[in-house]
Image 1 (spheres, one colour):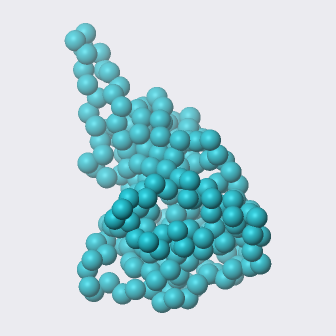
Image 2 (cartoon, rainbow, N blue to C red; image 1 turned 45 degrees about the vertical axis):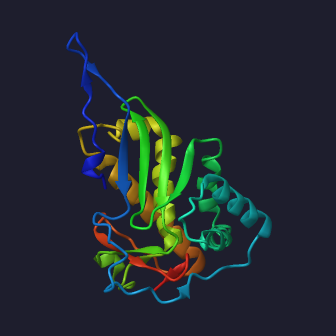
Length: 239
């Protein structure tokens, strides 16, 4: 969901023509990010997604990619590197995820640690996307609103590793399928990009369903961004 503070008003030239200025657009994993400092939020139980036999070569490539895209700040937690290793091992078992990552080779994107939110930030204007920053927290999961499609998965939890996939779908749309993203109003500075938001949720549902068919872990099948962020004890933890 767009953060309203991300909208930038286009400037007007002396001739009265609209000049499309560069701006940023932010899209959130859930509509109401939760402050993890709140004591009442429970940590997810350390029940982890099932890992199949790990292809170490593939896992190492994914790990190297995550490390290369991540620029560590001195204040970032020390466990992130280990969490990336766990995420890489997990992703290596899903060809669909590997394909997403491969599509982002040579694209201008980076990973930025953010304690309080999952958000993808696109920089550019209505004609182009220059770069993308994915704000992540490997110990932050998404507890999503229950719908009938979730009734066999009552808590509807997306692990931090799966939450990152939602952001990578945004990133792929912005940097690989750019013309479609722009046509959906993704970089419009004044209009909410509903088409893009719902296209990403649809892509997420399909990706999660395919992944669930491989490892039998039930994942959310949501229809909007309603939910909250909750603490997780590890990068692949689900309740």
